[in-house]
Length: 76
Image (cartoon, rainbow, N blue to C red; front, side, top):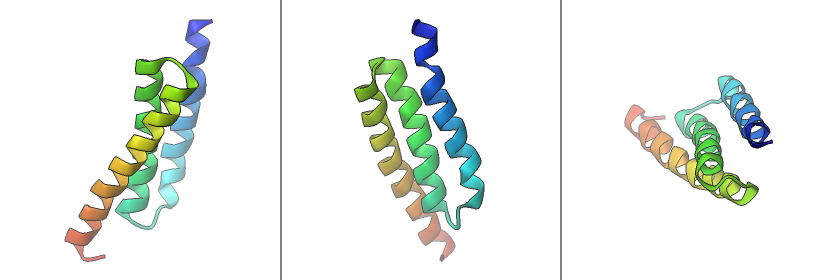
């Protein structure tokens, strides 16, 4: 039962990374990648839906900030 809990966030993260191919800029890519990584980390740490959602939210915010700063440096 425990091993099945990791499949849903793993599949969601994989879908996010695959969808990232259509992103225009680093801010969008960073948001998606950050959300995926955050969801995995939240699931691993919390082991429940709340942990996954909190991790995805924190990861998305962090990824956006990093990607946005990269876009600013590149002049986009």
